[in-house]
Length: 140
Ligand code: CMP
View 1: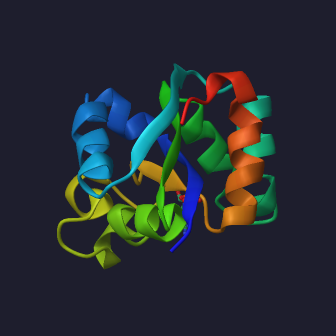
View 2 (view 1 turned 45 degrees about the vertical axis):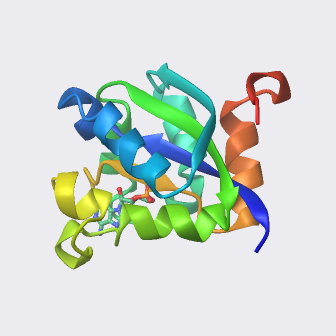
């Protein structure tokens, strides 16, 4: 298995409930290493650009409202098979469908306020990491 990097976002519903540490513990327990991290407030422009792939979806505007409603913690994670491993630890997008023990099953409020985002492929991970981090902010 290859060592990969992936982009993780701890979303406003989770920072609001002070769940940052509990979520990071689940990521680290799964063997993922935090190699970059910052707590930021997304601007509307930045949220819209990040989720541009969903621009035609009916939930796009609400999603951008939600993602700008409070602080987020953006992270680059590194580990064996990191993209798939992070998605496994996160659980299904809708917490109603998420497996027991996953972050979304334990913490997500609903399909929109679902506590975490994770890249869906190594290619998108590289794009998403570069969206938030300069090379010198990533220390593997
Ligand atoms: P994320 O992994 O960040 O990628 C896109 C986000 O859109 C997703 O998590 C959810 O927060 C949100 N999303 C996906 N499907 C729906 C939906 N049916 N209704 C509302 N929000 C959704």
